Image 1 (spheres, rainbow, N blue to C red):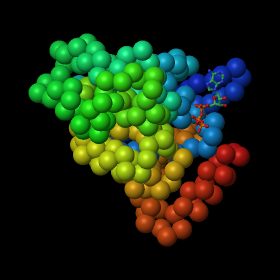
Image 2: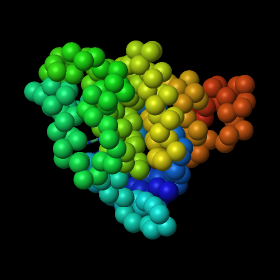
Image 3: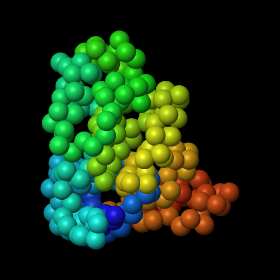
Image 4: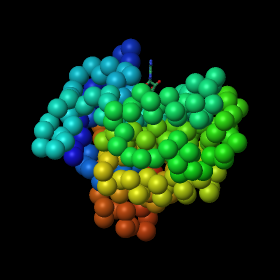
Amino acid sequence: MKLQLEQITKSFDNKKVLKDVSFEFENGKIYALLGRNGAGKTTLFNILADEVKEDGGTMNLSLHGETRDLSIEDLSYVYSSPVLPDFLTGYEFIRFFMDINKEKLKGEETIDDYFNLIKIDEEDRHRLIKGYSHGMKNKLQMLLFLIAKPPVILLDEPLTSLDVVVALEIKKLLKSIRKNHIIIFSTHILQLATDLCDEIVILNDGRLSLLDHEMLADPNFEEEIIERLKEEGHA
Ligand SMILES: Nc1ncnc2c1ncn2[C@@H]1O[C@H](COP(=O)(O)OP(=O)(O)OP(=O)(O)O)[C@@H](O)[C@H]1O
């Protein structure tokens, strides 16, 4: 499986945010997406998820020897601020999600199996989402891709609100599912990028570039990335 982005462009008013995003993401890898504030990471995710219309360019998914336009069905998008129905309990929401996706679900897992997976307690499952903490809401959002298992998973700074124990669990979970997915993870935490991700992709000056693996082995790697982001932020 491959996700191919070709010459994606996007401007807001007269500001060119994405100038030419061309990149090929491969199956089985977790990509960290790094970029300074305002570089356009969320804009790129919104375009991939069809929430913002690109000005130009193409997004193709190659799957089972066939290449087609990327569709909303192909991906799950975990927002940095979770968007969930506050008036439902976590349990009701997951039951609803499983119902509307039942044609696609192949596994035998029950709603409770899924809650066990993300370690939300029995009593919390039946509380209104409105009363959930930010971290619990994030976990609930992550459950959606664990259930639907779409080829492409986009995570916009999702681990920042999770406590260290849960963050570690989610990291393990992401690593365990990566072989059948393309996971793109936007973060400002360098440590997380190097810990969790197989590749680091930098968005700057409206373009995406892959960081050389040799650079990851360099003891001065963090300083070098910071320099690179600084320079290109002023390009
Ligand atoms: N709907 C919009 N209307 C106008 N400008 C926008 C809109 N969405 C994003 N922008 C602008 O596009 C640029 C990129 O924003 P974006 O949120 O994609 O950056 P980011 O890399 O995700 O930043 P951060 O790391 O701070 O979250 C910013 O200058 C932002 O102000």
